[in-house]
Image (cartoon, rainbow, N blue to C red; front, side):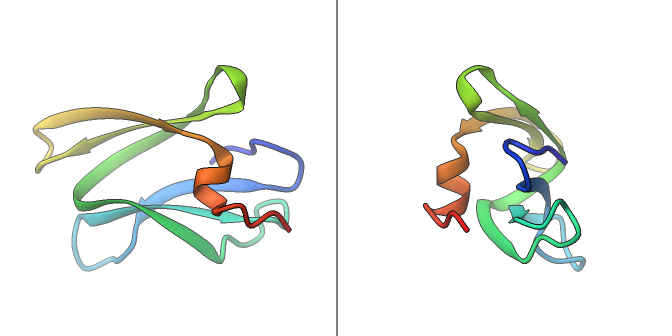
Length: 87
């Protein structure tokens, strides 16, 4: 879980408890008490994720995919996650 700006909370997990697929970034605006909104990061397998702050305010995410065969890093802006939805 990271907080890219005051009041905003981001974390990554799977969209469902029934399979190791559909990794999502969840976010909320209430200091981390809830994260009701989400953005899909990958449709296939994606597990063991870790978020990080990057220079310039971007967000980094490292995760395993393809049934733990590929360690993947991706970066994105907070605006990509929220879709410009700034409460």
